[in-house]
Length: 570
Picture 1 (cartoon, rainbow, N blue to C red):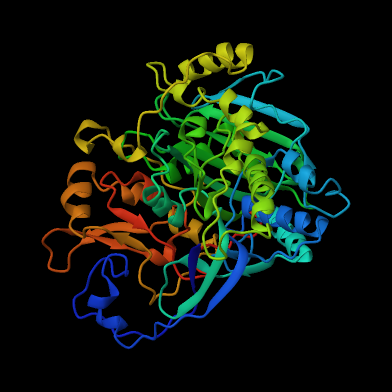
Picture 2: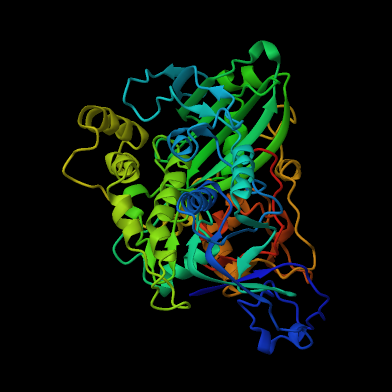
């Protein structure tokens, strides 16, 4: 049985006499920290049949399917879902072009129920960008980027709608409760026969589970990208509802994996969602994904759409790109991994919502007969549900991910982007992923950076305030907020590493790969050297720092419940 600890409101604590960069209990234990000497440690405990961590598409799909089955079989089943955001969907960020297959499986009548899928894709555009021009690329039937039958959605709105459906079915939803060990006032302790972990990409608890149960023993390391996104209201004359545009190429060089999207929404006003994705296996420490995104918007093909428009939202999130090769073991006594937490994204499609939802459905169907069995050996032992893994391996998710398994690693060749496109054209379009080999990734993203002395600094143009913008004004549009007197949730294993290694060897890449201005190197007060300053209140919970830090010294831990971005339908 898993004991999940949540945390909520803070309590006043005495300050430390010795200032540190990191003051979190994971780095400085409570028994040695005077802030905790007068804190009451007693907890309230509660029991549930199933606890789900994470209120995204996977977690909500699992919760909904469990209650559907319970109602169908007239069984009593208590399902509790905890979500660290202040409300469902507030931390959700995706492109998003949705393949509706899993949604239709959950709710065949989703249209009648009012699901917020308002924009069917009517026009697909794919381009290779040079600095001033575009080369159109035909999207042939069967290629991953073909989107006919899909919907352009604001995924946060869909998550909120799924939450309403879950609540109607009797799921207990607890937004604003971060599942962690605990911080400040002791939160509730949840006991369950089975816990489903659907925290999203690079989850705080999943990181611990991988080590505790050795779940990554027989798979490749996960590899990631960072996705940055904005919402704009544009001139109505330039609005093409249902149009989905994608590009590769400029401003990235051919050895840096990435691409863009620009989707025309149909939600009552001329709105577009646009974003830029950069693979976190890039090698130049001077690269800034945020500034590449801002520069990309000045391409003539993009700028012509945005001119005269107004940016209304900004956000960023890491995404899994390891695919089939990087799927860990998914089950262990008392728990299952679902959704983007273990990584079911179809990378060439840039889609993971339908596979995440399907994994939640499969998890629910596998564990329901076990959790409702009347002859349980023990009321307290955690149930092991290996049937979930077995069912996943015979599902559409497995078949889909296996078919595209070589597209992302095929990028690692002397021709880079262009070699990868040739590989996709020959082996995927013709063989549909049935080639008898499986390519490998290059290892963890943190190990791919070269020393700064071996790289050329990148000169980025200044933002014009009309099409491109600075970092802090962008973060202001994310609605991000953390209480100022919380222990930083961005912890360092060793306070000396940032200056001695990251700054000395890599010129402080955390000040560039962070999309929220969290990390800054500033002069020390005495004037002799530099120090790392962590502006944790700016954090948009993208997890990029935890992934890309070349020293693997940054450990992202869950902050207080309700903190972080407040995305409105991103």
